[in-house]
Image (cartoon, rainbow, N blue to C red; front, side, top):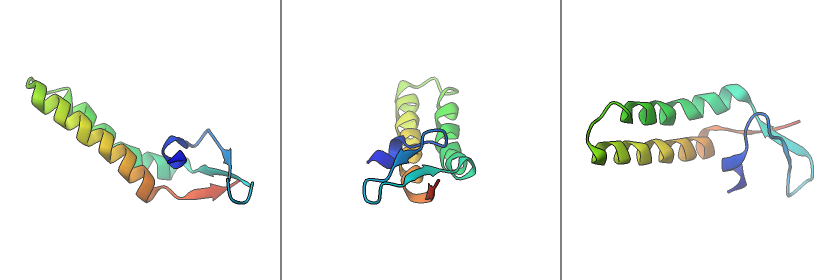
Length: 75
């Protein structure tokens, strides 16, 4: 769960080994762009249902892709 809040500028100590880990900016950006694009697309709809639905899908993409695609890097 802590990995969700980990960003390129926020290294944290590993709970298992104590070494500092972070995520790289290119990997973080590749995982964040699809979700952000869906959230921006939601701004162009008039229907509240579409706006809320696309916003939730974008948020799920942001979290899910971050967990799946972004590897931890030792610093």
